Picture (cartoon, rainbow, N blue to C red):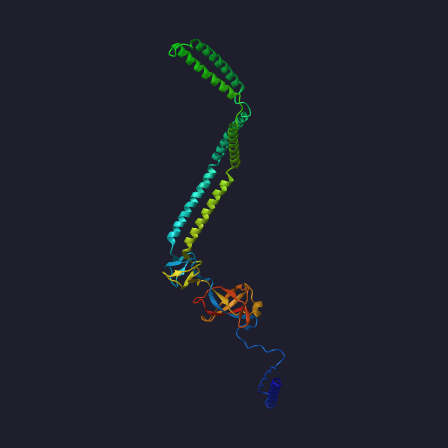
Length: 405
């Protein structure tokens, strides 16, 4: 019905114009015939929102710092010092605040540093003394081998008579002589045995007889010992001595084998592990000490203080907010997925800053990989790097970004 009404109205206007034209003079300029738009089956275009134009795509956005971060406390402790105020510009690495506890951590770091020096010296000494220790191991092995050879000989002797043939022959000769002396002493005493006890000749003969008997008994015992076999106790003793000498020789051989190609691997591993552990402890103590100083991760401006000196900070507690206000960029907020075909990284854009009534140029430096939703529409955030930053541009200002022509 609406379509028919529009059609009839149009025909009526057209008819009136035609009839009026018949009554004009030739010299008059005819009235233009209006164009009539007829409704078609295609849907009508939506009213312009100012976001899309022919050959280009526009999106709203805001000016934002290239870098912005909330700086938090890495440790728990009292803030003894805040070195900056709101609005201060800081450089990368500048100390912004300090936590209490530096005295104890400084002492721990010093102790760890001393341990590193000690461990390093021990490792250096190990390398320096390697030739000396090798020589000592060679000498020990040589002595151990000699001692073992002697022990083996002593053990072998216990398989035979106690005395050698020469010793036995000599002992038998001593026994014969002792027996002859004893017989002579007995004969001499026999001549004077019936005399009085206080007779000097009888006393001298008795003394000589006693000495001859003792000498004979000693010679007889010595011969019996030399021709006898060792008892079990003596065999066990020399056997133990031989085994002990063998153990020492094996230990000396093992020590030499460990050192013959250089430093003992077990000692080297221990020294290196000690040094590594000392360095790890030093790094940990230095890191803990460094964590007491809250530093700027980048150059920027302090835009907000959240804690103050004397307050207690927990791990992760926000201390301040830092932003790079000298390098501003534009971030779009409502670029629809339908317009993504006109947007690529590196493409040129025009940015209209409403507050400054100024248009600047830039390029797309980044497109979000993940979409967001805005009013039911799927949108992608984009980052615009400005070709130049106009005077008066501030973070948070609203902009309109035009992509394409």
